[in-house]
Image 1 (cartoon, one colour):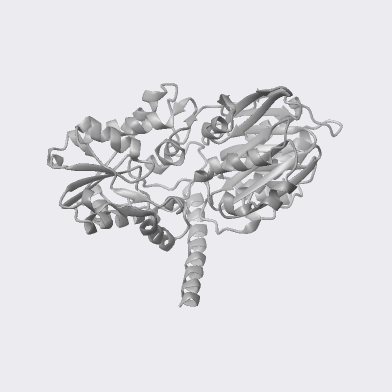
Image 2 (tube, helix red, strand yellow):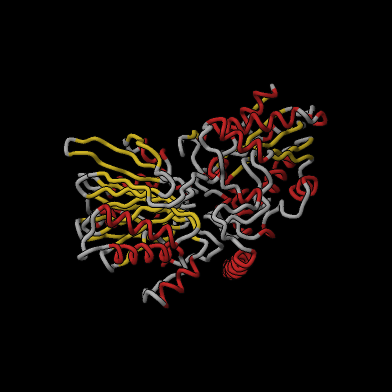
Length: 502
């Protein structure tokens, strides 16, 4: 899960890209980068940290040009962060291409070997995004005639990328001297939307991970990029689109609606906020059928993603809804923080209970999901310390039992609290008196009720079914090994920091 934005304008775009990344900051807090284009020349600056911390006035002044890309990074596949893996990436051959990627390739290791052994292209980092960039560069080179590009040539190259790459990828790329290219994998697992702004000088175009980035920047949402589709916009603002995949099918990530996306976004024609209200309805139906839960005094959400679900649940069951936690908004999202110790520490820094809402009450806490259980356990403890008589815990999502390999940082089952445990055992693990999970069919129906056009979903973290069909036990085992190595390095770093601090 990363945030990407690409724009073609008739005015300088450095501030526009910066503002766009701020709006997408929830999709990645690990690193940020911007590249702008002045005709055939690229200007780039990137680094680790939040958007607001990476860029200074001097950096922004150097990012001149009327077109460009932005990226905020979220690490996937358990990789330890290196400054070299901040995006966008750049390659100078054959045309000069820079690229930003949201997702995760499942065949990146095989592609890396092919690029080196057969195509004589060198990949300098462990990032699958650099692999994808080199595949795109190679396909453009093969498709080009007389070393010139036109929309038809570019679309042939994207078709070549689809034939070679597996996994999830939403892409924005700039081709030096030509324009902006945006495309999406044949399953449309990760979101990508196009917007337009009419000016006196002509149309401006913006592609981004979520519609909230377009609307807040003054662009009108035109439509989502279709699965397998490529869109090319030249520097004059001329728009070209083509379906480049043989058998595209929209299978969006279900976890986007549960947690990843902002509630004010609309993805694939579906309001995220409305789907979360429907999730609350589903939970209410399930709780209504549990007579032993008829003693609930108050429903309290875990801010922020669960608020719509908790509110609708309380309305449906005619229960009191209260805000029981105050959130420090200067602490990042704990789900996407590396390291268990850092996540555990940040929960206490991020949330503080309002004692009067808990004291002597039977409390139903509602969260969007339970992944590792670290956050849930700390929150239940806080509720008990604040005086709650009982603590029930409801998850708007089903149990997360399987690795996600399409861009979400949950690659090994042993880190997932639900793997190999019953609901009663999970409740005991997080310290709750009772645990209520959303049913998977109810979650899918919550999204379909908002948009019946969505018939299939990428729900592998819930059901273990991988839509790309190439995820093997051997692949998952390899990911687990990478994860263990990266986590071991993080624990060593944390231990050294602790020793230095003492």
